[in-house]
Amino acid sequence: GAPQTRTPTGAETGAPTTANGQQGAYLTTANGARLRDTDHSLKAGPRGPVLLQDHHLREKITHFDHERIPERVVHARGAGAHGVFTAYGSAEAVTRAGFLKKGRETEVFVRFSTVLGSRGSADTVRDTRGFATKFYTDEGTFDLVGNNMPVFFIQDAIKFPDIIHAAKPHPDREIPQAQSAHDTFWDFVSLHTEAQHHTIWNMSDRGIPRSYRTMEGFGVHTFRLVNEAGETALAKFHWKPKLGVHSLTWEEAQLLGGIDPDFHRRDLYDAIEAGAYPEWELGIQVFPDTPEETFAGIDLLDPTKIVPEELAEVQPIGRLVLNRTPTNFFAETEQVAFHLGHLPPGIDVTNDPLLQGRLFSYLDTQLTRLGGPNFPQIPINRPHAAVNDMLRDGFHQHAVHAGVAPYRPNSLDGGNPFPAGDAEHAFVDVPVTVAQAPKVRANPASFDDHYSQVRLFWLSMSPVEKEHIIRAYTFELGKCYHQAIKERQLRSLANIDPVLCEQVATGLGLPAPQPTVPLADVAPSPALSQVGREWPSD
Ligand code: HEM
Image 1 (cartoon, rainbow, N blue to C red):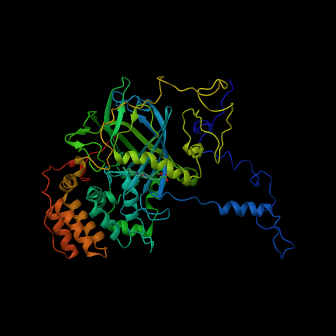
Image 2 (cartoon, helix red, strand yellow):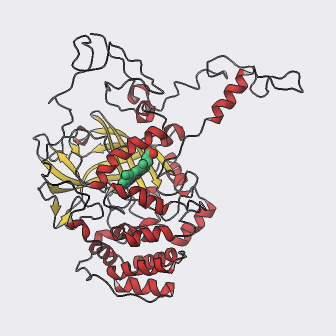
Image 3 (spheres, rainbow, N blue to C red):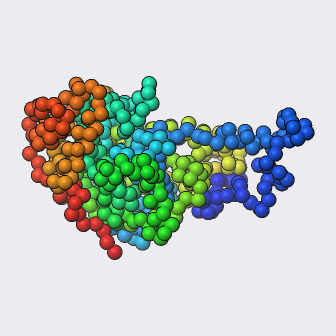
């Protein structure tokens, strides 16, 4: 049959590629005609006017006019780096993912980001940080699209537009929440108390990291792993930085926002260029795949909950080293497109309702951001596995596909790719049983506990960490214009801890309310404090 033409992989082209630019020593037009002059328009005499026939002028200005693409709807501000992931082999018992087999090395691209600021905003603001990793595995790309905090504000993706609308700049004034009025953010998190857990992480020192190199990363959701025998386990992913977790003080963050708004971007770039390659260990917490999908009474499908490391150890499964800065920020860091559906065989999704919505959102937003359906062909997004799909045409199509027509079965075109069936390296959707239950718009009752893990976090903090948290709540709530919102948030703090509530209330000059739910009976988790932890070493 006819051979299938496919887009060359990143590995074959040596991404990033300059194949479409910067060849040869001479300046040319986009069509390769050598130019004598690019500094003067073609004019009717030296005093003009400029001639419409100046095709070089028009090409140059027209292309410039279209240089900008939309920034990401969230996580617009970021910095990226290339690296290598080396597997220890310790995950082989629970997943058949080839890149996790002992000694296997896989190229990666990582993009760190803030969530709320626009592309030009400051790095050191109090915010969650994105930690998104693209593993170019030979069984297809795996994107681990995580954050530097292990929980999320909401339990259901249908609330994502709402929380982001509440936290982004005001529609009338376009004043970012991080620098001015905070009413809508605190209105949201005090009305949607499921957000209190993520919020206390934000108010802690984790919200102002010292460096991308000193952040943990978390896949947040529970994933389903499948091994060679088809057995499944549930798992959460953790990145642990070799340098340990470190934060700025609030004063440092404020000063740097003015003095060096690119502080984190510069730090990442300078460290790699100096050969001080940042490193992380990837680890997994593994849980039995039971029908209840709970562990130690914790609902594993609730993305506002952690499983304390004391209850389920984080087992190291590999090491990430970032060793190469991008050649071109736009081509790589800006155009990289992560997607939770990019899964290799051996890693599958669960029914976490936040994860389920994310599976839709990333591809959808990238269709607009990256101008149509062919952005997987952009060098930074190209898989390093062979691609032989039946997707055709569309804006910016770079592949020259051969063959009669891409459909299957097909009695005319023997060259069409064939499904792998049960062959090795084929992705298998785990045939989990789907509940026979009425359609509802509702959460399970286990999602209703909004406070016990917030209290667990608070009780796990050292005295200085507690002091910072009190000051952060007081400062941020102090920016609200509406007293009713401050009072409502204080009622949430009362349900977390009376000392926390009293201290913040005093700072705000308001009375401390009584709790409305009984205080959770939880033991502190030392692994949650940044003070006095042990981190991987050589
Ligand atoms: C972007 C993490 C929840 C929609 C990102 C990025 C990260 C991230 C790290 C930046 C990717 C990059 O560097 O290009 C997370 C985490 C979540 C979460 C850890 C919760 C556990 C959600 C939800 C939605 C969503 C619930 C929507 C339903 C988006 C969108 C982008 C984005 C639209 C922009 C993607 C692009 O333009 O390429 N997210 N996110 N996220 N996220 Fe999420």
